Structure formats: structure tokens, C-alpha cells
Image (tube, rainbow, N blue to C red; front, side, top):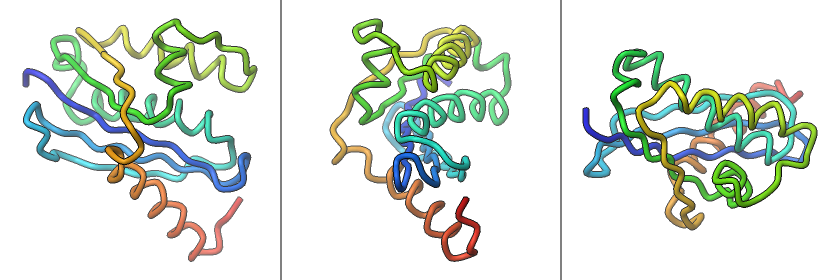
Length: 146
């Protein structure tokens, strides 16, 4: 495995409100390998974006193994300017609700050979966004809104 591209998205209905994450793993040619979504309880959009990154990195290690993580180059593509710019060190991390998530995401990156973050337009993150909405819709249908 040379390079993995991971599209991530997190969303909240209500901000704060019911939240979910969507993650799509692709190979270096951009072909989908695996996709996941998960409801994550009540939170803000920014918390959901961070939790999407954390979920993606943890899921990679769970599915592909820690040894492979150590030698893998990961490119995480997100439409969250705040998330990408904070992890690049360009924006300050001011929100007390986001600070522990920033630290967790930062530390998880150390388990990989390289993790590059790339800001993409929302229009290029439709599958991850759709996974977020599918998870929230399913939760809503089941009457499990928190």
C-alpha cells in the first residue's frame, strides 16, 4: 500500500445537535476501497469534523493494522477549512470543546509515516457528506435523536 486518500466529513443538525461522521478510503488512483459512517451523539459541526478525522485514522489502524500505518502515507481530504488550517498551524485552536479533539487528532497522526491534510471544495466531498446524512437520517427514522 503506497498511498491512501481518505475523504472525511462531519456534520451536525442544529449546531449543536445530532451529529455524524462519514469516511471514504480510496487508493492512490482515487478508487473507493471502504466507506464508513457513524452517529456520534450531540455536538457542533466543528466537533463532528474533528471526530471524523479521529474516526478515520483510528479506523485505518483497525482495518489495515498498526504496522501498515507506520509505513503508509495518508492524504486526508476535508472541506472543513477550520480543521485543515488548525492542524496546519495557520489558525489558532480557541474553542475549549475543540482543543482536546485537536490534541487527539494531532497525536494520532504520529502513528503514521505521513498524514497530509488537503482542503477541498464541498462539491468534491459529496460521498463523505452523503454518508453523514445517511447516518443522521437513519437515526432520525429510528427515533433515536439525542
